[in-house]
Image (cartoon, rainbow, N blue to C red; front, top):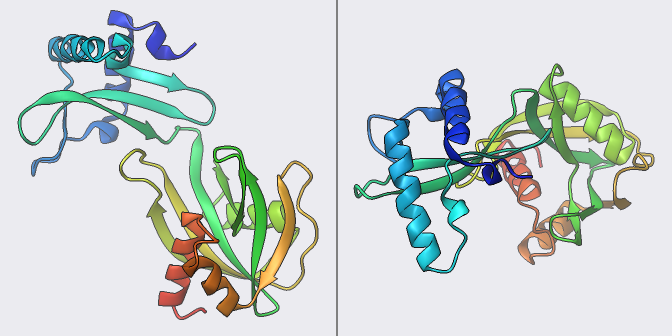
Length: 236
């Protein structure tokens, strides 16, 4: 059951307790933006107004409930009551990093002077994608250690050289999650671990890699951003 289905005062109480213990997630910058309301009575007023608007437009009024909307071992979703820059009020939904999680990693591997791609099935799109290795981070490990682990899991390779390419936010409109990018040189490849939905490893020349991006055959944003960072660092 989604947390929002239990709703009500208890949900708001849990939400405010979460906000108190995670103040950095509820900062309201002095220069403006979307101002998060943390007064219980103001939250209830926004909930009531939004529930009425949703019902009038044929949508379930529970979509107005403020609080921790969903949580599992991977994902935490919040719905906040906010004041918009024009002074109006409403709700805004977002995902935040779990306390027991670590930033994800993306690795652009070079094998025999070629970019090593994987053909990976992605559950969200229900389709196969050409992309570079990536994955969730494991808490307690450094981003470099997580990068080595992902390379091993998805390509069976070990990096002889690993260069950080910085951090990105994958979707600032919805989530706070961060991802660390790396450039890697690998000397050998093997087989991905059996639980990975990877059908093949595909080394491609840089010119072919760029063609796949420019022609829209590679649509994975992490792959495109890692390529851009590597280019700007003169690594390709």
